[in-house]
Length: 135
Image (tube, rainbow, N blue to C red; front, side):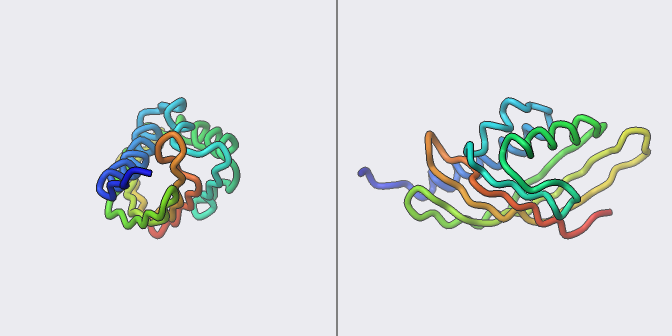
């Protein structure tokens, strides 16, 4: 097995999270499903959303986010530990959005608790959104 490049792993994992954020913000639902493993478990209960498998939760994200007039995610402050073909970690998020018919924007922030698997590139195997605040 060739030596792994930890910097490359970190950047590839960050790219998966960036693709996740871009897909939600741009409504790229085909891209969204590719960032998760087929057997991923996703938990959005801290925002009143579901916890479940990739297809179920991606459908909920699409139905929910297509109703939002504007949304922008920022994902940052990555803490990821890679061991072989798995990784665990956290990242901070800030989401700014405008609801239909409302003036101004709302904001929310918190943490993503994450587990990744390397299979045809890095994919999110587990994502739990820990929403800490809303304004």
